Image 1: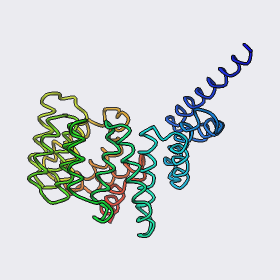
Image 2 (image 1 turned 60 degrees about the horizontal axis):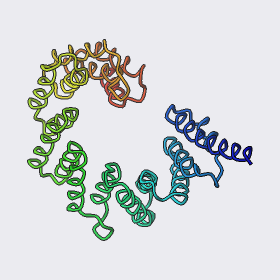
Image 3 (image 1 turned 90 degrees about the vertical axis):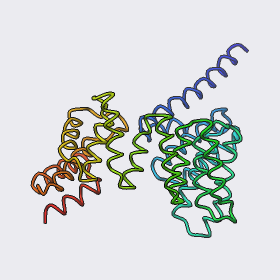
Image 4 (image 1 turned 180 degrees about the horizontal axis):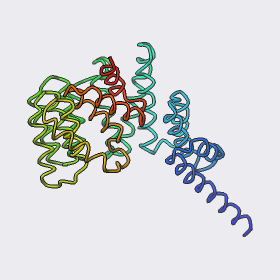
Length: 314
């Protein structure tokens, strides 16, 4: 009897470890290894739903959206009490709907809306599902539940959970509705709630061609911390886009190139591309060409660098 209990405990532990290991492999983008680990978990295991969820995340990352839909649907069927499963099921349906015909969009719409609403019901603190619902309300026709008022209501709910993000969502909604005064107020409140969102306010000013306000935001940040590399890069980018303060922009980008970017920070390829744009605005085609080539050597997917190189090579 004791041996049987030990065996059963070991089996459960192994399954649990399999999910943990599979998740770790997925996070490391070792998709084939993660898939093998997770696919071995049997349907009668308590970890089956989690395994299906992570298999869905792998398929989604690989842009195999139909497969991802099946995995997430399987996870929800096995355990419908996990908000994240519903969120990603809805996200996958939304991604599929984006490229589908009108008939299929009409079929998928209620399912994705229901999935996100279920996620919010299960976890009222979730922000991801609420943001997806905002996009649904803004894009769906009224007959399918679309409503700007509902989007605003949902953004206000997010504001209670994560103030800066709520203000950002409201700003985006008002900007979409061309209510620029209201949008600016929300973006200002967003940056005050969390300084990490300052670039969002600056982007609003760039779109409005109010470049002086955008420069002031980043320069104030650098005044407080001259080694803030995010702000340093943004000054260079703003210079490249606006054609203003070119000396300052060049100096900032060259300083950024001495720094090793962390995950999710602008790359050196991006900095070189912006330097190319600055040189191009100065009429220095040879220098611009060199920077564009450096950018593309590190990242061949940079569309703006490709277009810039074409311009200065004529």
